[in-house]
Image (cartoon, rainbow, N blue to C red; front, top):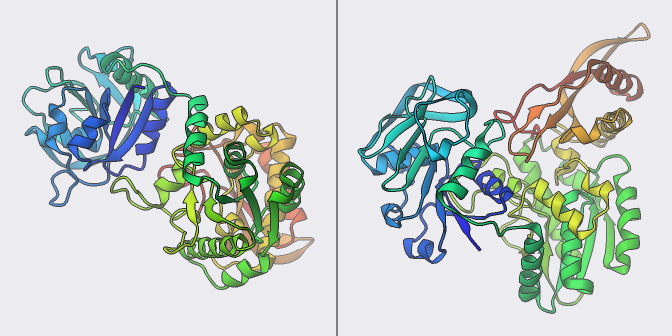
Length: 510
């Protein structure tokens, strides 16, 4: 099967490049920028992509690839930092830009390039860089620029090397997918061979080979990720799988009843439901730092799974529905990425565990998981659910967590989702939820002064969760939601709407 290899220099978007390439039904794989050249050659790639990254190529400790990769004779595409790495490797000049370029820019095409074939002049591209190329290396020519970047696209046809300053993998680049498609099909001549059907086949074989006759415990939350993981593992392992749901007390309204009624009939005695809400709330008491919340929740989850697994014989593995975005934002295992926030099932895991981890979806994005779920027969009512974080409502209460605030947030969140469903908007939105803020404001209700909490509504649209725009909720529906929350939820007297996008903000507040 033809493949494109991505060298990871630490960009938050590296895995997104892989996903975009896979959309073209061509397999892509991510490796560290420092990969041994012999190992890279053994992978026999049709092309190589150098990702972006947070470093500057002129710094003493900047990451650099082995120059021998440029002697392999296969096409290479450098993106953002990757382009600057190419420039530095071949004697060009990269400096700190006086005017940094973040956000949308118009790509002005100066000459023909196969890489830009079919791309209109002034097409919108997404920039995210603080350095710029001021001198391109000998043998390279410039084929496009922006108002702030004299060299936005460069190429060396003899060496089969291309560099672009913008991020084609990001949804905001209007024709970014076409740029990647030109590279992998017209330049690399890679043939289609990747599909979710093949992913299922490969994962089942790998899981069976690794697990053998041992038992696996799955942490089941009832969300899309863990449910698809459950169906995949069930197909691979049969009765050697035990699925365990833990009520942390941080769940949405009615969540536990819904999950129990859905999975108990499907899994029978191999489904275990535990209510440990008091334990989690007690351990989170007085904790305001979101990273500490995640660490505590991750630690508690694992210890409970270990305790539960002791009831079964030959349990050696803990399965989780970890996805690419969880890994990207928590910790980079492939390159020098900056940690954005720890997820309870990645960065929140304790260093020492008695169970070995199985994470069959960790190389997939949410939309790929939904496609996988449909192929595995997961009910549509679960596949279409909005993402819900592992730490649950713990990271939607900013600051200290109390049972009272959890109750308030559950009611407000239920009203939001109910109104979105009622008005046919739920499926238009990637993710919507309420955040309870650590501030109070003065209000008037029934001629009486109130001094109560503020709730923020967050609703975003996205393709992959890596970038997102706030959803333009119609004013009349926004007003209805606000009125219902303020009138029906005791403890809230003001509602605000979050109009920030990702980046620079994340989707969740913590």
